[in-house]
Length: 299
Image 1 (cartoon, helix red, strand yellow):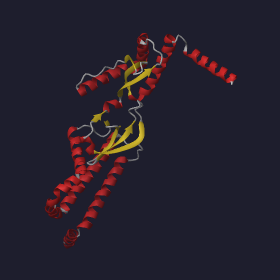
Image 2: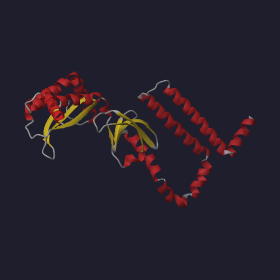
Image 3: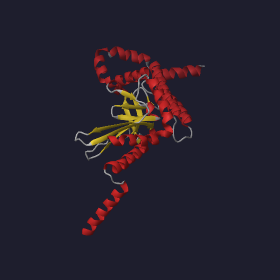
Image 4: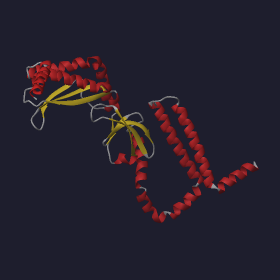
């Protein structure tokens, strides 16, 4: 008992040693828990990422509380002496305060969780970690229509939530409104091709159409708004230069968006060659080859 009392007295007189001991103990426990959650898997699941994030945030919160209790008297004295320069400290720590309040704003609004897709400014990706100061995402190539991971990890401060809108794209992990345009140079009437093109698109989307329709209704009920349906949409427009342009929108599985776009582009080019140019696509390639051969002979 006397040894325990002397140990307590020693650490109360040497708070820096006590602080180092507490940090070491908490950091060791945190490392053990993260290693246990990680296990032997090479790729973390969403549940594992959530537990790891909660472990990191919980250990950091416990450390702050313990440090406050250990240094409470010194903090009180420091706070009294800090009154004269309080304004300067607030201005200097403005970004840190915004990060903390941004984290509180995110938690209170439930704008996103770990494993969901979000868009913040020009950054798009899947949330893999968030804490009181920053949020980390695995970047996704959203603007080029591939919806694949780029391999880049982006970390941004939580203060960004006050200046930049946060878009939750979680429903796009399964199905997405995929839009693309096809432009032709010749001034011609493309409207007669629309029914045939829609028929080809329906054939490509037939195997998942019922599931896409149900998922579309689920998103509508969750969002509380009337969204465009799961049926494909084809619209003929023109560019600023007056070139005819076909705008196509389909509601399809995210992982198949690029594949379906290529199939639809192939169908459009086939119909365009057959109906507008009045020339089979294969014959056109043969004519081009013949022309190239003749040029080579003349050279």
